View 1 (tube, helix red, strand yellow):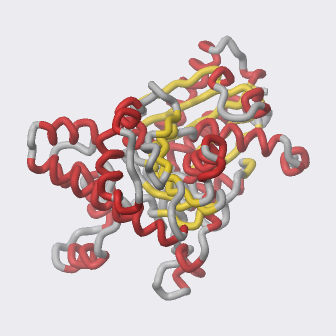
View 2: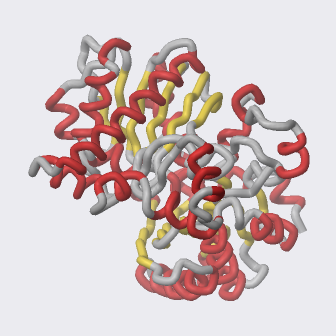
Length: 394
């Protein structure tokens, strides 16, 4: 059984083809990843992603020497499914309608994923079952004292306004990897998913109990182009005094803030680090703000866990930036976090897939874990295929 996975970002489309044998073994077996491709998609719309996905399917089947009949299931990463869709779900018309209804909550992601669903339907028809795997699902276990906002309760009841959390697919994967790598240090974990979009997850005994993102992926940490958490009074001021409208605010807060807004040049951490080394004052400030807010959130999440056993870095920045990892460890040294400088320096990118980078005398284990969103989506598809739900689906 081969499982095709679509991971639609805001401007990129990643597709992976897995063989079921990987899920019959313990751990992640790279040999069962038959093929992987990344495509830049211009336009950022449902139609542009549908067109791109059609081309990706043709290419991936050709390069893997497979035909359409070799595909048994198709998994899709869906950023937001609202309150109703928070478990891995077989896609039918009602599921598509629910994802469409949540476009306003994830406007730069949900339409793109829908385009991939459209493409798969046009190619495979109803012969191959499609599965929605939600970024919010892992965080459905967060207690109400953290998932609800201190606003009128009817906002949750009428408008479904609550903290959903995101990046849960990869954070759930990382929690399982910690249990495999360090079974004696997997009770209290903080997972730092750091990239253009960044968030934390506090995981207690394998279950998410807190996360930094909220109703949308805009809340929480300072990110590449997103502001993260700011005083909501700023928004009211800009609406009332400066007459900003919703469209303008969404553009600024989602695409012109964060590292880009502070540096006035770039939202790419690699370029921030280069400019910082050249003593660019705004780049220095952007880096310092990023580290300060990240450290603050990590420290506050230890209260959700009653301590900390393992700190995980994952995602583009988390995996590739030894400078970010070291700066965070230095800020949080009072928690007993200490890195092995050489191990941290060596653990860059795919040079070492997963690595322990904490010093031997560190009170907290620190890991760099290669992101596994696509693997996790395929794994959940395989589990669903083995369940009664799947076999009873018409």
